[in-house]
Length: 217
Ligand code: MD3
Ligand code: FE
Image 1 (cartoon, rainbow, N blue to C red):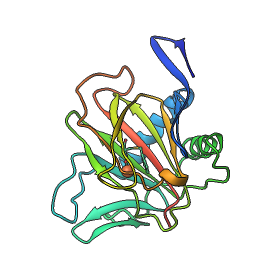
Image 2 (image 1 turned 90 degrees about the vertical axis):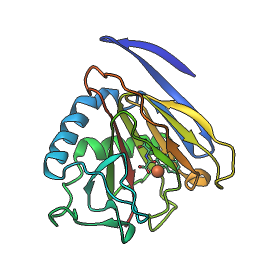
Image 3 (image 1 turned 30 degrees about the vertical axis):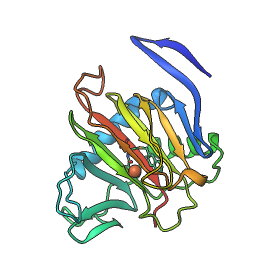
Image 4 (image 1 turned 45 degrees about the vertical axis):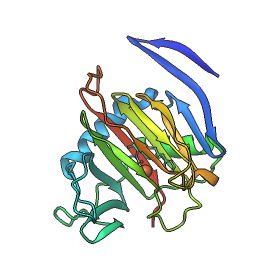
């Protein structure tokens, strides 16, 4: 069920779509607080800049990343892991802002995961052409916790598969303001983002931003 509402110039999709048990899209759930979220992303990335990390296999990722909170996801020649400090400079990652934490907790509760307490947020920045190949998120210590994702800026095509790489993959648009909660049986589902198409978002510009909230450590 979804409704077309109007706020300023943007048609906003609201409502809930269930992709699979434990995988729920809350369309437009981040719109009400987008200005604060964008301001907090700017402040975080001024202290811990977006960077294109290198995979253990030696490839530079097309998605630029930074983190906030006590646990930041990093990759380098040593492997994938969560780190309390930013490897660029060695300082702790910037604190998780209240706007992030409040939204992540409320969205998780609305999707059936009350008590979600993320200790880290990975912030992904996509420029045109950037993509994230099909992968599982399995670097977190306790996979019983869900992941909450928030999309801002240009639209993307999200690929959502099954629990094996061979399972069929479905495609869904992820739009500015969409919040998705992934938990339960789908926590280990393969997923990815197709190469970003160029465009211009009125408030975010020529990029897509994605926040993923994790209970990692
Ligand atoms: C499904 N990010 O950071 S968010 C990632 O839009 C990541 O930047 C994508 O995949 C992005 O790891 C997708 C949606 C998402 C996040 C975590 C999941 C979907 C998920 C974990 C399990 C299953
Ligand atoms: Fe992922």
